[in-house]
Each structure stands twice: as structure tokens, then as C-alpha cells.
Image (cartoon, rainbow, N blue to C red):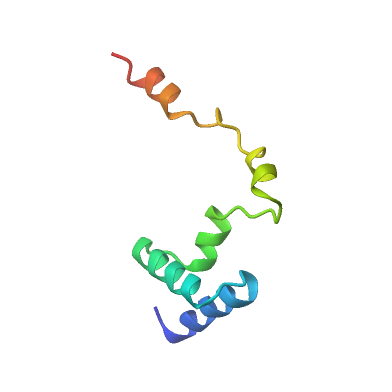
Length: 77
């Protein structure tokens, strides 16, 4: 990764995500290990509504991708 991308990643983490130094270090380490940029990681995998945990939990459908059901359908013995 070049210096330009590093600055853009830091700018994104600070300005867009509002991260502190520890959070920035963590996301940079994780995304480098995964081979993706922080913006891609955030856009694809981070879901933030700004509401409380109780409200956010209502947005998750536990049956959407039920691994036990999937395994039973395709790997039943």
C-alpha cells in the first residue's frame, strides 16, 4: 500500500467513522490481514444505525441464514 492510500484510509477512519487511535490501529491491522481497504470493509461489513442495541437486534432475522438448517438440507446423512 502506498502513502496516498494510507492517508486516505486514515482520513476515512477519522472523518467518516469517527474512530480513535486504538480503533484505527485495530481496523488497519484487520483489513491488512484480510487484504482489503478500510472503506471496503466498512461499506460491506459494518452495520450501524445509531439506535440502541435493543432496536438493532430487531433488524436481524435469525432465520435468514440458519447454518443448522442449511447443513441439514445439504449435508444430511
